[in-house]
Length: 109
Length: 109
Length: 109
Ligand code: NI
Ligand code: NI
Ligand code: NI
Image 1 (cartoon, rainbow over the protein chains, first blue to last red):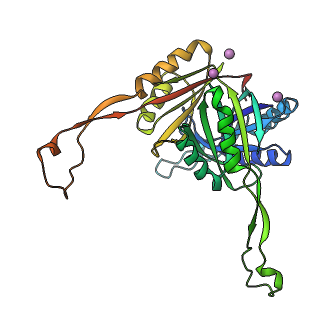
Image 2 (cartoon, rainbow over the protein chains, first blue to last red):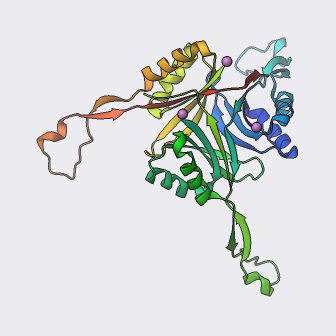
Image 3 (tube, chains in turn yellow, blue, green):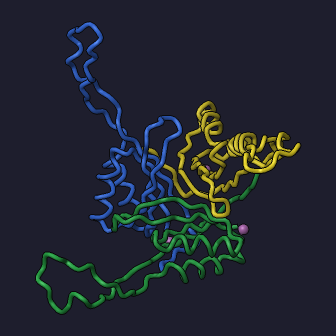
């Protein structure tokens, strides 16, 4: 057994949570805050057999990795309208930090 | 020293917390959410000497293990009354997941 | 890489958080509760290179160690006034508990 601690963006946590449930992976969720960005994130704590570590990492990578996304910026009503206002811009979303920790023992009561 | 991480049901956490205090075991509590059940649980983080690990595990097992309990189901006023409505049913409560983690160092400032 | 888990008093957490940001140390914050004192504390989870462990420990010690502080006790209007009421008293504040944990792997997606 190992313990996986994964910190993901709040916006990706529901999808990841559902994938864990579908895959019969027990994850405990903690509400956390990042150091750099003040925005909320979610930390998952998972106890998992060694042979399933790659499966868990792949689920995290799939749902939560850093990726580009097009977003239409909110229109600033106070600014003079110019032609750029209507164009979507590419922003970076997501991102996950994952630790795999050794454990001495694991028990369920 | 080892770190014990114990995830227990919210309903058992106060009793466990009090036992830790009585036993002079310093525990830090985190409010967490389970992956399967949406219900809240509590995670305890404990730094403990190797010789006291069994004592901590026993306190967790005693207060928080999975056990059967009789509960009187709430009466459904909309349903036609039948004789079974008054009988208590046996439900499963509690349950704890416990990790013991190795640590490189432990310091207090 | 190692994982540092540091539990500090709430009143010291903002200053520590800012020092981590200035020092380019990524820390994830959890809102936690102590076992002895009911007062809130904050737990920081940090992934750090071995060569920077002492730097992190020093930042925690500097901002969060147990120290004496003079405080003027609130005046009790119901009590008969005596000359001691106006004098500040020395109280203990702060305190940090720090674990350094080994990790098997660390990944960012
Ligand atoms: Ni194992
Ligand atoms: Ni030891
Ligand atoms: Ni390393």
